[in-house]
Image 1 (tube, rainbow, N blue to C red):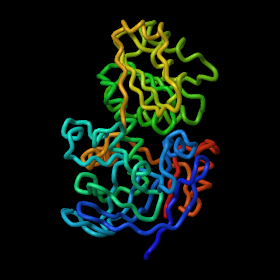
Image 2 (image 1 turned 180 degrees about the vertical axis):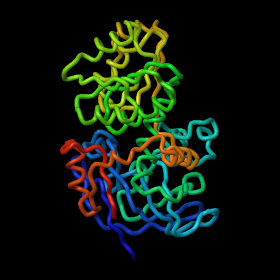
Image 3 (image 1 turned 45 degrees about the vertical axis):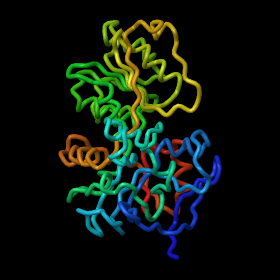
Image 4 (image 1 turned 60 degrees about the vertical axis):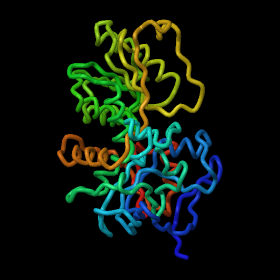
Amino acid sequence: MRTMKAAVFIRPGRIALEDKPIPTAGPGQAVIRITTTTICGTDVHILKGEFPVQPGRTIGHEPVGVIAELGAGVTGYALGQRVIVGAITPCGQCYPCLDGHQSQCGGKAAGGWRFGNTIDGCQAEYLLVPHAMSNLEAIPDGLTDEQVLMCPDIMSTGFGGAESGGIKIGDTVVIFAQGPIGLCATAGAKLRGASMIIAVDGVAARLETARKLGADVTIDYTKTDPLTEIMRLTGGRGVDVAIEALGTQQTFESCLRALKPGGTLSSLGVYSGKLSLPLDAFAAGLGDHRIITTLCPGGKERMRRLMNVVASGRVDLQPMVTHRFKLDQIEDAYDLFMHQRDGVLKVAITP
């Protein structure tokens, strides 16, 4: 039996590199050899035990690789072809998929998120891809692994937050937290036509990156009260759209307080505790506010569109890869990423 190295969830607080059998493609499936992947904030939630997964599960949901095997019925692809697969792998045939909610594939909340959740993920040498015809997308010639590494998850999620928020040309938008997801939301707001984009964070380097990706105003919350400054910038009106990109009560509430009456709170954070609505900020439910959540849109058409954006040069997310590790160093990579040391944004993992 041929084996591969894989990063496996052992228990809360412990992910380790283990040997696992190399998967085999069944009908409608494919196996890709991973060439580059990364660590997501959701993986850290898993490591901390804040999101339950089965012990022994291979973690990771952001794959870039080459096709190693194609199962029966998978056509239009070739062995050795470079591909990406979204973090969300819809089947394209169930009721939620046909109703336009591919992320909820199968009818259970977050059902489209399989890699590293309900099936083995991609922090490994090989990955089994379900519903391959719906999810494999070829990487255009001329694009490197690192140029497309953000497409499977954080680019799709961040852009999705801007899209779900319904940002219109001329809108004023605030994004609370400028980690990888928030930075992608900032770039997405720019592409959607917002005329004033306000980025809030407490790390100077992240605020500088936010400016490069489209933020017009940056607020360091350790030096300035964000809500006071947002109201000053908007003449007391509030913002049209507030995007929450961290997953805490404080940032969620700040987004709600920053909104104009009738504004939209677009929530991207993964919340690990109780979330409450403050009565005054919620206007007792009478403020015509809209609160919407977004789970990373997936599928091959989404990946094609995102790579088109990268290829066009309108957004360059490659500088977000701040650190690089081999798969053998995955525990060190997690330690760095989880503790946010050395200015880390995203790490590239190469088997």
